[in-house]
Length: 456
Image (cartoon, rainbow, N blue to C red; front, side, top):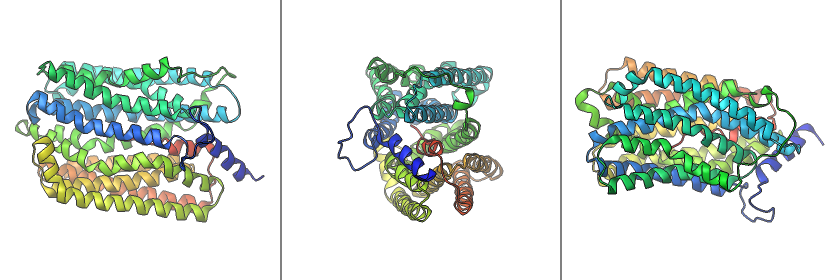
């Protein structure tokens, strides 16, 4: 049997095996696709409801602005730092699982690694607390505390997700992801019913939301790992550096719009930041759907690459991009035609059709860039992906800083330009990788499948 065939067989076993279901399943998708997709959709729906309930409870867009800033900052920071840790843990556990070795030593290493990263960033949050409070939270230090707690709370959440995906426990993975959004809604509703009008408790609801799901799957024994041989650091840091750089820029970019709007807004424009966040959420609907179905599409694409069936890989990639492009076109047109009505009916706010269309177009191009980035990672292009997202992030900062359009347009142009730079960078990188004849490893395929920098 050839090396590429052995890789394909090994990868098939990694994506097909799950201790939560039998091999007799007739679901015509890779094992775990449905629970992970459902978890993503629940998390996405919870995001829309959270801001709706928050506005009703606090009374206005301006009052909600510090909460939207906290919410966006949390999901720019936590996945950016901890997603690579989750990826490396999942990869290392899946590798050991495939060769019959227990993963507990790997888990111990990753817990130490995650704790070190969490401590470094937590120190940074505390050191910059005054500036963060002033720029984003209207000098409310309770929200700085909420940001700190929320960031730390995502350490066990991402480690739990890494354990679940590395062992094929996809239902547990989906529970951790979905419960985060559900807990936010439950806590927010409880505060609203109790008549709470200060933003601090709502911020703390965001902060502690990741923990109940982790506790639930832990109590069910779904975070267990078997003993095994000692793990070296290289086993859990194989591509960590490049993954970390790419993830920070990718997660930052998808959440950059509301954060930049918060910084650039004049004192009398704070209510516009919340309205802008509504628009960003609406523009993300195709991105939600893309992430929910990519668990089915990317494994099949990666299997072709693992077998070195490059012609079929190219054909599958074209089909994926056509699907993503169709979703992008529909999403952009839908945002232009229906977006203003949806925003007005659901959030009782106003955004122009042009603003919503530009936001949807930027999100659509980001979605295309993400699809190409995952293909490049599957072809062992971690460094190229990190450089591509880095160029996109720098483009956003420069374009937003240098242009002097009104607030919304200024940020929209930055988002659109940065997504286009990312798309171009990954298209060039993918062409280079395909021409070079690179054969993926099982590890790179797992990194690609779990590379989802967008969360809510």
